[in-house]
Length: 148
Image 1: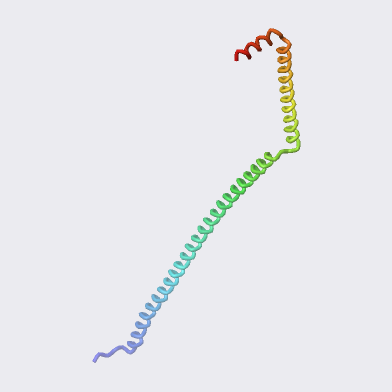
Image 2: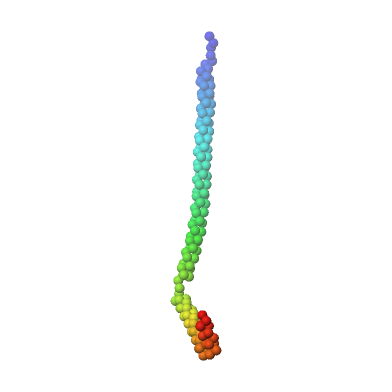
């Protein structure tokens, strides 16, 4: 039988404890690395979500600004169109001065027409009087009437 040294069991146990300590240290190290990796993954996901959220908010702000710009331009167009229509309506309405000017112009036109008709009638009557007072012309007219 082989005789083992008296501290053999102690040395054997120390060897086992050292081996177990190496595995425990390795396990702790793996646990730390796993925790660090999990932290980095969570942080990366959070940063990605934040970047996505910031991009979304930036796009929303750009869309809101574009919408506001379109609304402002439409409001300006509407105001211009309303002003144009109001001016057109105003132009359609006759002011008292315009109505008076039209009446004066119409009265002048009627007066000129009456004067022209009067002058034409006077001229016609003068010609008739001349024809009636002219004996040779009356004789010729009588002959023409008798022939017809």
